[in-house]
Image (tube, rainbow, N blue to C red; front, side, top):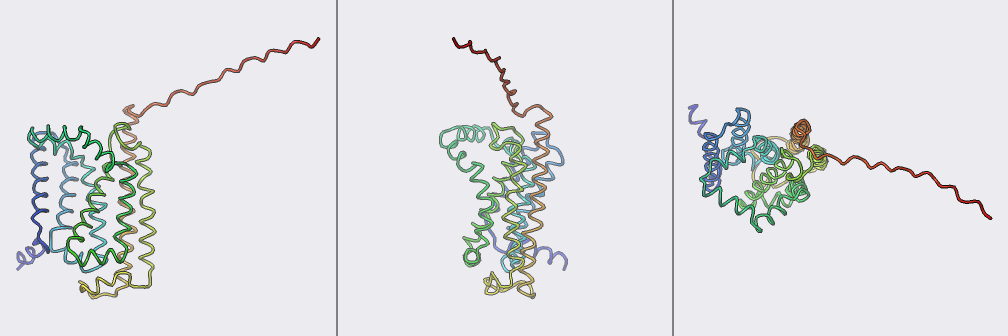
Length: 292
């Protein structure tokens, strides 16, 4: 009886071969790379916790509740957009994943990244302004009631919404938690610390609007059938608080991690040094000759 109940929660609400193949491939590469490199327990724990959150959020029976209750959907978005990407990037898995690849793959990826096309794509998709605006903008776009309705009525838009949230989170935290100075990093250490404080502000405002709204902003959940028998406005209030408080806490933690990297770079003497100020030497004034 207990085993049957557990299996129900593990079985995905909507099975996806593409997600499963990608998830297994990333996990296999990380395991292979961890055998070749010395990876700390903390980094491995952060990576596997992030991977577990992604799987639970996208490929278990919990997805039914995410699709049929607004506050549950907000939990899913906070996990996919904030917590899971932060944990995955904080594990710094890039070198481990590369070490798990066959040599031919690594050579191909290195050449592609250094090519004109690769550098052009990276210059656009990893531009700090573009990534930051996308990180905040996608939250606000998918909160628009009409956009939320489209996502709930079309499974393709629903999956695109989830993947866009997660990919924007990965790109944003990759820039903020970069352990390198600028250059080659794309943000200065000071901006990395300040950025989460800036990006959380519009999210807090949006969460406050949803929290204190006296109207049902998302009737699509009533049309699809709600998972819980609770007051509509109560569920909406809980959803607004979730995107207000936990999201802000996670971003604050990200800012603290960025500050730790800043201090580490400063102690190592890797921050660019400012040129000493130029002192201007005032010349003694020469008295003018007396007039004849």
